[in-house]
Image (cartoon, rainbow, N blue to C red; front, side, top):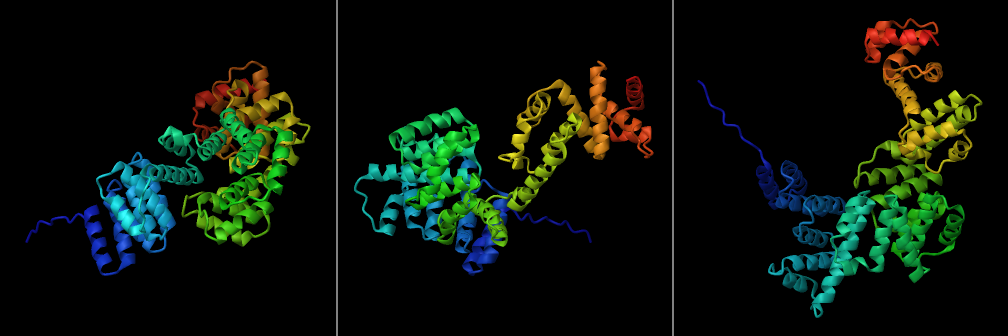
Length: 472
């Protein structure tokens, strides 16, 4: 007997209703899975999202819930409904200050919602000066959301959000500091310097501005000014948790790890400012003062805020910096200019790429020949260069084809420069790289066919390149 099977589609609504049923049955973990599934199937449904977030908080995962909601707030173009959802979340998390102020911010956009009366009853307050309370709500929610985005490496989005706040509040000291910090981390140094100079002119003891100016001088290489500002940071005792947090982060970045740990660990212990940035800084600071297991613990906790590849961990970064030091000794201090070029190429391929920042190898690089410095500019600053660009393209082609032996790479660098000096047309780099390997077999049996396949060229192009190489 033929039966027509009617497919049963388990859509978001199905899983949402399952979650509601399981909540009524007090099966919170099962309900959480259902709400999560509903949200994953329809990320634009705020009912699914809010129930998922609320239940996360009820299961002790409030920070994760907040992170998800703020991400959605940005994706939904600052939809005011999120102020209400976040207010409700903070009630569950037993954070009355945030709950009240996010609620007040919501009422500004939904004055007929009745939520203002609900807030007054819930928190047993009577709002006398509505304008001042609303202003404080905008100030507080603006700072909180900006900090969350910034701490999760979403700096452009943090600045975009800041621009939606009333100008009169943007001009307040705290917000100008935040704007300067964002400009600094986006390498907009002139803009950051102008803001910070004015802030310090108004108050020389501003710890935030002092921290940011120290970082700015570090980035711009103004050594004397940097040392003077760093000395101030090292000896001053921050007066509040916010200043302690800021100075601790800056000192960690400047590799003053012991003092950074001293400032930041109490914030973690007291559960103050638990964020991506705090955990990231503590992971690095604890690693460098010998607390390796603690460092791994902080790194693992950090992943709940923002997934970061292990290559950026302090232990992998330490391996990378050690490898750079080894390559510096082995290649950059060699008398052979081709070996120095190869050393720069090898250093460029160390991951994470930013492991070279602040490394002592820059002192050696500064003493290299101008031609080698041009290659550095090509590698790390994106400078467009024809000659070195083609040499680099050949090295990359060899790497992709699996030929990473030092002798092969040096053979290519030497062959390339000889060809270039002989004014040979070098458009077809893949064919010339393959030809170099064919002439430098070194006891291997490398066939033309294998080179054609490995370097994505043709036998005709390879033979043409071989003829040019024979004549040099």
